[in-house]
Length: 121
Image 1 (cartoon, rainbow, N blue to C red):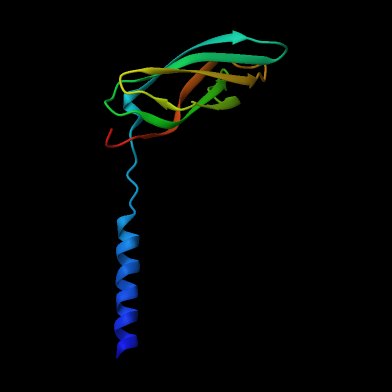
Image 2: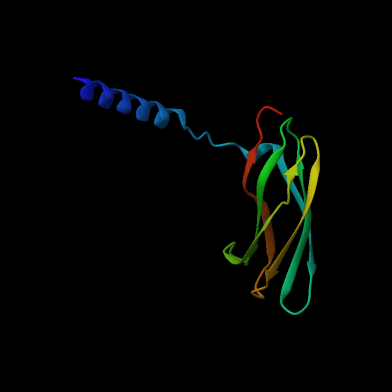
């Protein structure tokens, strides 16, 4: 009987732990990216920009994705960079992305790939 009660308590505890860990996707609507493109040495392209946070919560673990698109809109080059530290609420942080150019880029797309808003600040 005691074993049965211990097993039941262990299962109930495991179930409460599993249900306590939830993931809620966050929208990057409050993070805006602006950038300029510069040619660097050889076939490298440099993207300099800022991530502006228009929310009331700081953002951390911000990853910026830059893609070079050809005439058809297909991705022909790609690069990522990480924002050091946090992007403060109602503030901005600079970034720099370096890409190897495929030579067929007609335009570039730069966006926030992933991030996390800090809660309770």
